[in-house]
Picture 1 (cartoon, rainbow, N blue to C red):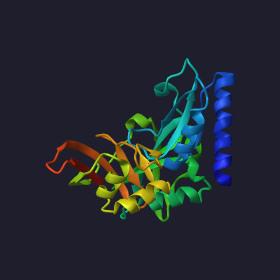
Picture 2: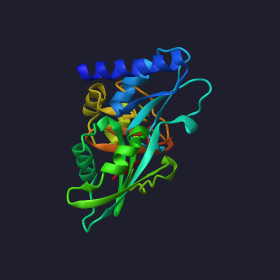
Picture 3: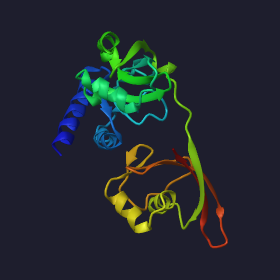
Picture 4: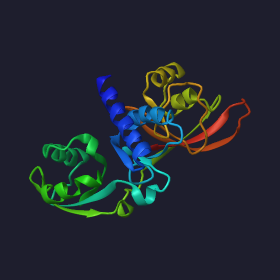
Length: 248
């Protein structure tokens, strides 16, 4: 895809700047599929120090940060937090915030996760956008907004809601777990994996026999996200008992 070629060319340029000029560089925000592409490129660069960072542990959109030997991510990351407080009676949705940001001419790649709460939202941004958003992001539709810039360390992450599912699987292969977690046949699960729709801990995986371990997070695009919360003992039928948390 042309977009992927352009994206990887930009990332490669940032890698070379880091290695040749001994400076911290970063990409734009990447989704899970783009992170997989970037990871493949980064692994080809011997000695490259890099990290995918989105401001908090479970961030879905992240920037790739390239670090010289002297730099540590905690001190040199390029992100800031835009905290929005709304002045209105209707609680704004993720779509409301994203749409109003796009209305300012901002590209999606400059905005990270948008964490919505009843009276506002925390929006992860690239630090270069601070001044523009602080002075121009005043409304979402007819709702007035108050913006302030904070450290990403102050982000308010909504409490996760999930439902628990217990099952048993023949093995801890990825296709078995996707089939069980999302109530699919093993054939449909395998097709989804081979079609690039499945992500393990944020990276696209296309091998059906990938072994999954307790604590791994699995995403089936269009269906949702689950955590393999617990791997239990082998049952009398020689199957492995498992517990999933499916995020709501």
